[in-house]
Length: 160
Image 1 (cartoon, rainbow, N blue to C red):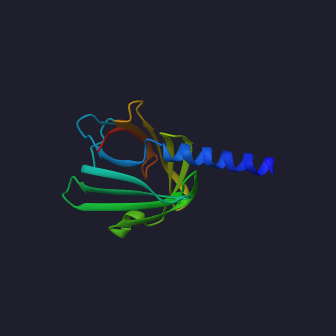
Image 2: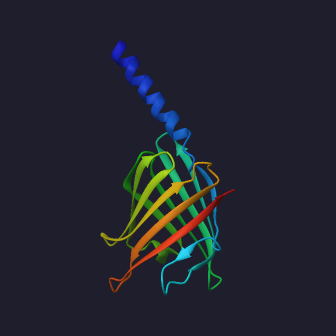
């Protein structure tokens, strides 16, 4: 009986850590504070990311934005709360998600990795860290283009 109570107490503690994760919420990309690698232009005019819990063990990241060409886009990833994957990915336009899968790695509250795969090959890794005050988040995004060239972006998000 004591072991069962300890396991239940631990599970409750782990759940409370997740509930306290400062990454949950709505984040707006701050283009002015973001930095793009040499020769890399921003591909978006605006972007909003919303991370929410769907169930006790499922999470959803919804990304909506407007590209620099004025076209709207959106993507949703559904994944286990404690990370793993690949996440279920849907997008508009659908071509954005063609052959794409994402593996989510939960390090600790406010510290996450998102590894993007295209047709099974790693093409990008995004490391997202929420600031200590919880008002901003920094995403370091390293990606490889079709020619094998690596680029890096530092994206700054403001909590809404």
